[in-house]
View 1 (cartoon, rainbow, N blue to C red):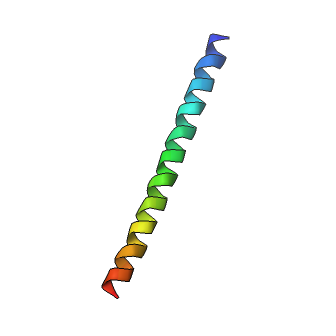
View 2 (view 1 turned 135 degrees about the vertical axis):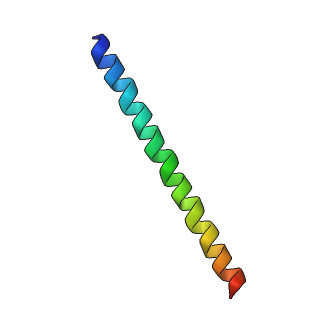
Length: 40
C-alpha cells in the first residue's frame, strides 16, 4: 500500500513538471512571435 502511494505521488509530480514545461514552451513561442512582429 505504501509503495503504491509513493508511486502515485511520483507520477503526479512528473505530470506537473510536464505541464509546467509545456506552459513554458507556449510562453516562449508567444514571446518569439511578438519579437518577430517588432523586428519586422
